[in-house]
Image 1 (cartoon, rainbow, N blue to C red):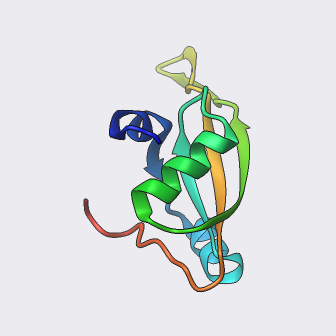
Image 2 (cartoon, one colour):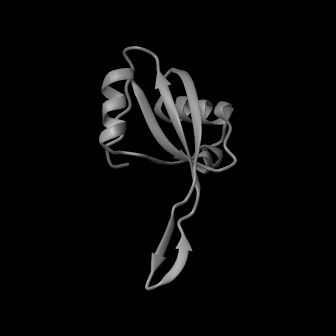
Length: 99
C-alpha cells in the first residue's frame, strides 16, 4: 500500500489544457505531471488510491525543457515528466475541483 507522502511525491499536478480536455472526452484519459523518477506502476497505484478509480493503462512521457532567452541571457526551462492515465469505462476524475 502507498502512503500519502509517496502518492503526493509521485503525482505533482493535473495538466489542464485544450488537448487534455479533448482526451478526457474522447478516450477517458487524464494527464498528470509526475516526478522524474515515477514508474508506470507507481503512477497507477497513486491515481487509484487518491481518486478511488480503476486505471486501465498508463503511458509516461519525458518532456524536454525548452531553451529560452531572458534579457539576452540564454537559459532553459526544466525538463519534466507527464503521465497519460486511461480510466476504465464509466469512471471519471474531476481535475478542475479545488482541493
